[in-house]
Image (tube, rainbow, N blue to C red; front, side, top):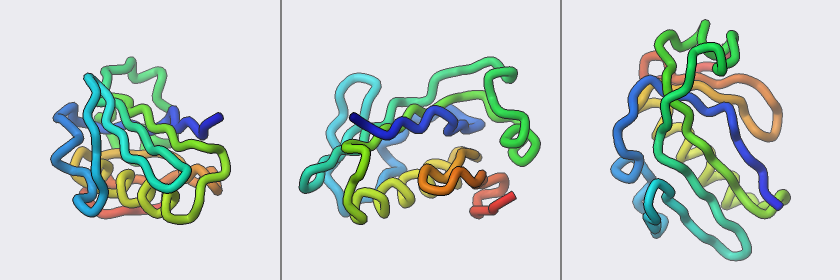
Length: 121
């Protein structure tokens, strides 16, 4: 089983691979990019267009112009701390470069990068 982050939205739809942390080996498989660690895996899909109505209003209010969803999953459900750190680094790299917003998986609080810097609305 995995933790699926369904609410990660960005303004722009350029490829993700150039943004990902370089201290981890990433494998591209079609529209997905994945990294594996000792007993865990983090997977991202390339941005896909969504209707504005599908994006939570609180995220749209903080980062106007969100138009693409990036699906992210981490497995297993209880991953080790190094997997959580990589997830945070990935969200930050993609969110700041593409103008993004999502919810912190462990707390449910919104985080956003409206101008390239992380904010907590």
